[in-house]
Image 1 (cartoon, rainbow, N blue to C red):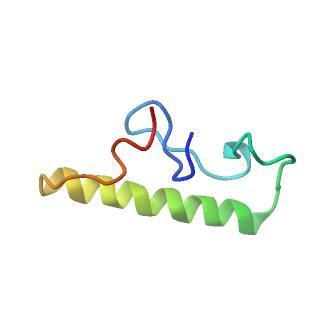
Image 2 (tube, helix red, strand yellow; image 1 turned 90 degrees about the horizontal axis):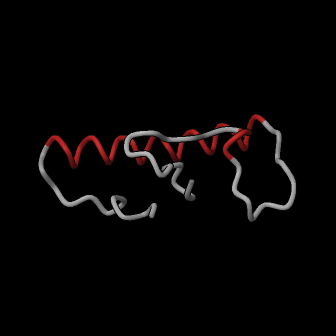
Length: 65
């Protein structure tokens, strides 16, 4: 998973407490952190859908290897 909530599976996104990054030394089990993670993932999902609908280049398409 990357900082945008994208996973290595196309079309699958992760957000919330269980989708924390390995670089964070301890879990941040907080509603605010989970909501922020969901907001970022939701914005990237929206961008993916707009790019797909209008056949535009997607700036987030190569964010996950």
